[in-house]
Length: 321
Image (tube, rainbow, N blue to C red; front, side, top):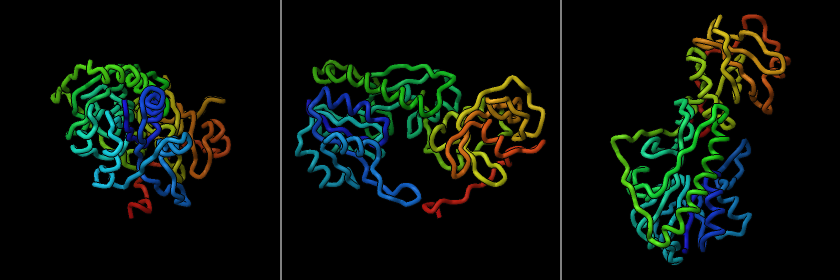
């Protein structure tokens, strides 16, 4: 089966590896290189980098739906278009171009968490069950009929990084099982129940800010949802500090939310929240590498009554100005 793959983030790489082994992979489509880092050096996204390193035919159009892009894809006469975290809309003409249509890999149990941030949304909600879905692309966002779906348990130790990688592998395994059935035409499509649909939005910078006035479990879920990148954000003496790992403590809060309630030797710093303390274990001070919170406080030397600053408005980035 001749396949074209479209993806950008690292989520799609395990699926791409399956397509390499199991199909006639004709083309990899990814987003163009973008400026990144302080130097704004043009940098490929993970799928483009993988394709280049592995000698795969790579196409990075600014507009995947324009006539030139369509002509290039049409010339390959694909049987199937597979997408995974591509980051762009696929028009009707392109969806209908392959003989077996277009399918997408989505890391949630659709119709729950349609949209751009299903993994973060599951963690923010404190959910214990998620999964992955392969569905047929339609004009409506993540609303096409389901071809395959599998559940996955979220562990208390999971953060965005670990859950992202686990769901990427699970999606690839599900795709591997689905491909032979698609080729034989043996797949039964199941419509989604729109009445059960929920939606998740793109993460904004303000969403990263920790509010210590919230219950400790809610604060911890925000930390999990944005670790290891871009990192949930707290402030210490006016400087940003990314909080990357924390655990719930049995100790009840006994001070102003955000204030330090003590330390646990070689473990971390206790921070008062609305109801109880949170043990902060890993963080990344502005301009520095990730470190243990215990080591950080040895250098920071907080005085009695010190704590994280109240939540504050972020300075606009260069792109936002």
